[in-house]
Each structure stands twice: as C-alpha cells, then as structure tokens.
Amino acid sequence: MEREAIMFMDPGDEAPFTAGAAGEERAAVSACEHCGGAGMVLATDAEGRRRARPCRCQQELRQRVRLKDARIPRRYEHCVLESFAVLPKADPSLGMAHTMARRFVESYPLETDGRGLLLTGSIGVGKTHLAVGILLALMEQKGVQGLFYDYRELLKEIQHSYNPQVNSTELEVLRPVFEAEVLVLDELGAQKPTDWVWDTVALVLNTRYNDKRTTIITTNYPDMPASAVLQGSAAQRAAREETLGDRIGERMRSRLAEMCVRIEMNGADFRQGAGRARFG
Image (cartoon, rainbow, N blue to C red):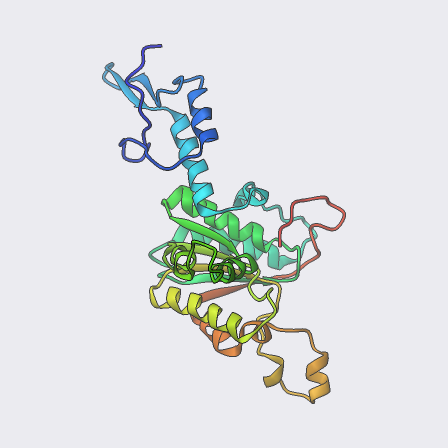
C-alpha cells in the first residue's frame, strides 16, 4: 500500500492529531492493518482522483483518548443507550427514563439550555448506565467534552489535595469539574454529610449552575425534603428513610430543582442473580 508521511489526524478537522494518548493506544494504531501506523489511507474520490484521508483507526484512537480524559471507568464503558434493556415486565418508569435520555441527547444543547438531569431510584435500577450512556452519546454525536466522577471519589481527591506532601491543589482537582461541558456526578449523597461535605457540594453545584453548564446526577436517595422539615413526630421522622435533603441539605436540593429535570426510576435490582456490571 502506498502511504503518505506518517502523521496522526483528527477525522473532524483533518489536522494532525496530538492528543496525549497513552503508549498502548499508539501501539494499537501502529499495528493497524489498514494504514500500518501512517494514520492515513489512500482513497478514490467521486471524480476518480486518489486522495489521502484519515484512517478509521484515528477515530478509534480519538474515542479511546476521550474515554480516558472523561474518566469513565472501564466497568461502564459498555453502557451505551442502545444496550439499556427494558424487559417486558419491568416498571414503566424505566422505559420512560430511557426515552427521556434519548430525547435529552437529541435536544442538547439548544433546547436543554444548560439544564441537566437528576436520576433518582433505588440501587441497581440502571441510573449509572443511563447517565454514562447519555454522556457517551453526547461525546460521540455532539463532540461534547465530558467528565465522569463518582461523588465519593471526588471528595476523596479534594481531601487528598490538602496533604502537604501532595503536589495537586484543591483548585487543580476542581477546575475540570467546574469547566467540563457535561459532568456526570454519580451517587450524589453517598458520603456521610458533614459541614465540609455540604460546603463542597454547594461549591460544585453553584459554580456549574452560575456558568450554565450541564450536570447529570444520579442518587440512591429519594428527592424529598430533609427529615427535619417533614411532618410528624420526632420519632416518626427518625424512622423514615433518609432523603436527598438529609444527605446534601435543603438549600442544595432546591438548587438541583433549578439545575436538573428529575427522572425517577423504579424497579428491582438488575444485579441480583444476573452477574451483571454494577449499574448503580
């Protein structure tokens, strides 16, 4: 095969591809059976002229780099919208959630106008699958710069930055969270609430709200007020299931109502007896 000079091209703009791909990605391109690592192949256009065009391995390379940059865990890389299976006997809310997820991708960004989604429901109904599926679809179809963070992992990284022996600072951890075009924040409320946790949640959500950046959130807690403001006796309130208001505070729960459209998902835990990936 006749080859052009070795270069890596971005299929979108046909400019040299210089993203910081890891060595294993580069090795995969070098072994490409179509271009042999050149990054370009020769093709005949409609007028019969031979022209160089980016090899399809460049799109695959670009996608792998995007996945790494978006921090989507390998456990969830397969969680596309097309693979979200709604069984015939499943709760109707799951089918509705799937439909709303597809519509969200189709309408982004003009109709969504910075509003995100709040996916609520018990463990294992598919919230994380849908959230990641939306993010992957937006990255592929709309060229979105996305980011995935587990809520607890984000808090740990911020706390770790306070260690004087660590080179990163709190701002360095938070900057990509603030600036991501679309952020998936998984399992909001999973960390035991403290004043520091509440302040950190407020900082992240308020910053993204003010900048009109889209945030997709999953939580296992019902989107209800804190037990302290619910009606009933103190004993009755104490006996109730914890709510999202309990875990992030009423002020931030109110902020979420402005930032996100709520999608409630009900049903059985997909993981029970199925040996599937953790869907959250």
